[in-house]
Length: 145
Image 1 (tube, rainbow, N blue to C red):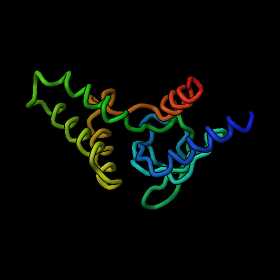
Image 2 (cartoon, helix red, strand yellow):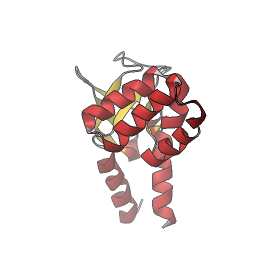
Image 3 (cartoon, helix red, strand yellow):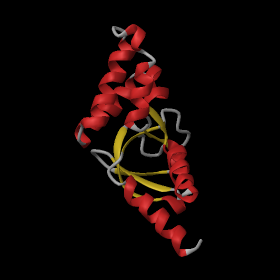
Image 4 (cartoon, rainbow, N blue to C red):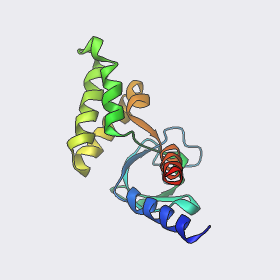
């Protein structure tokens, strides 16, 4: 890894700090018992695949493929448009709530949005993705510039 690679990854590590995530509900090894729990990334070392997540009672160490994070708010909004035909559905209201909280909310409100996404599995493909996929895409985009 050359110096430029280090700084790109280091910047990505800093970008992850403060991101709201939830632990994959089907995580195979879960010694902390945090499956399906929402937390906030406190530290990240992408090169080593060490993501530290702060929960109310403790900090856990996870790999990026064990965590879900939000899609970009414009992607969530695009997915919301696909549900416009049924504005009264539970899924539409849940996704609309998530989209608004992600777009305009602080960390506390983003935690509420992530809890909503976690509690409505039908909307998860429209508002969250595996953190590993997001990291890979972000780093690929940096190299493509």
